[in-house]
Length: 276
Ligand code: AMP
Ligand code: MN
Ligand code: MN
Ligand code: MN
Image (tube, rainbow, N blue to C red; front, top):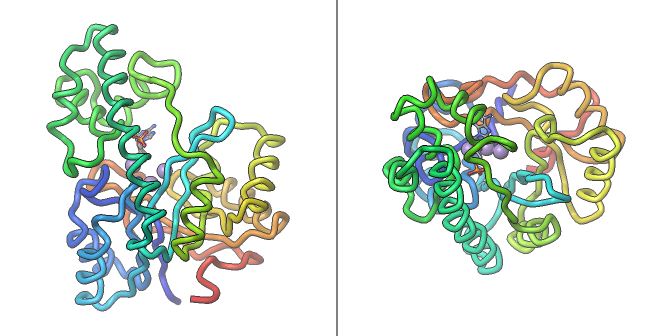
């Protein structure tokens, strides 16, 4: 059976391994079809594709776009995009630039809470000068003894209501879906089980996502329990959306699942790769 892993990160966003190292790890763990989906960035794809080809696995161009929808941050995984598409690149650049301003505000907010120099501290963990994220702050907070690991750093400082959390406006859902469409890709709603919304809002989101051009939802994700997988398989069928699968791997010691760890999709859904 073909093994798919269509969501993971490298040093081109907030992962710990280079695209080449992720490719080799995916191949050694039995992944047959792999997508690299760095946050708001495609600069790792060429390197990833070459390494995947040399390792004998199939590669799919990807990215994970940050979106604001009704005060909720959503992640949209784009698969099969043309990274040379100008509209997509303009959009991704705009999202990344917003991250710089947000990082300043996160640092100010941490300083208010008695944690100085967080911007410089986080910047030391940045591995792509074009992209700073909360994970880089989390690593700084661990380094300086404010949390045992990055998960605890998020829980204590970087999630809604905590001292280092700031609100931020990302791209709109229709902008992100538009860029993915013109770049020839498929749009996947990432880890739907993670969004802090109730059933009524989830139904609203899935309907709007589909009607705006969304293609699929991530049924299998390291963020999901078995109950989530069944629930989102059912939503995929009800809303006429395809189903995707990805580990969301970020690197050794910082992930819930490793590359290739997702089981086969539940019965009764149509995979996002059906026409690949
Ligand atoms: P950002 O896009 O900069 O807001 O960062 C989002 C990233 O932070 C996600 O892709 C994860 O890598 C990481 N993240 C978010 N929430 C948590 C959490 N509770 N524990 C660990 N990492 C998290
Ligand atoms: Mn991440
Ligand atoms: Mn995500
Ligand atoms: Mn991700």
